[in-house]
Image 1 (cartoon, rainbow, N blue to C red):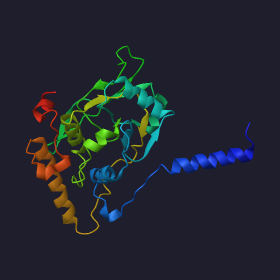
Image 2 (cartoon, one colour; image 1 turned 30 degrees about the vertical axis):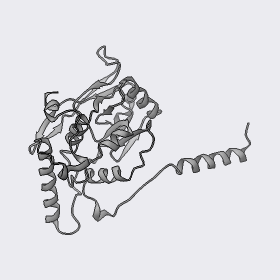
Image 3 (cartoon, rainbow, N blue to C red; image 1 turned 180 degrees about the vertical axis):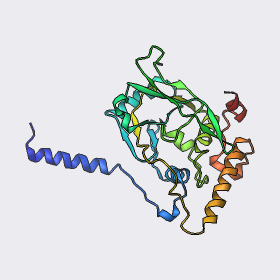
Length: 255
């Protein structure tokens, strides 16, 4: 058995090794322009090396069940699809007693909000039900709160940082772009990631300078997402944030 001294040394070495692999960025408050913009900046800065690397994207104020990484890797492997993206609205932190393999979230469909599709809130289903799927099931939805896939999905379909001050629209934008780039969207069969929904709102959004700038940028973002969904894509306008060429927008609508 190791002595206390060698054990402490091992803990220090372990902590040092882990911290060396953690990268964090901050931006001044006055440069923040909503969740899509911030996620877009992260897409630019994140180190997504390795062909076999996995990426998990979440919101803030998250927690995780024990062995969450093993659960999610097992679930993703069951899809048997290199281009699988497992995504769902996370279970609430106060529902932790039914998390893990006990339940899963089903997402399917959209409703319109100010003319922009917003993902339908899925039901929390229990895995003891006889109709419980034995592997992730296909869906047309992508949820910002939890997205798990190979990192090449993040490289090939980065978050559009030009969608400033936008809330509704982020998810359908990513769903359509991932799908037309050849990625398949799935409902996970586990709830491994949890979210604190107790204060989930956008009332703190404001522009530190001229409020009219925020309004102008928000309207430009709405026009941008509506143009993409209407098939009015022009490469010089969207660049790497446009639709893919593996499937068409018309195919997505039919799906």
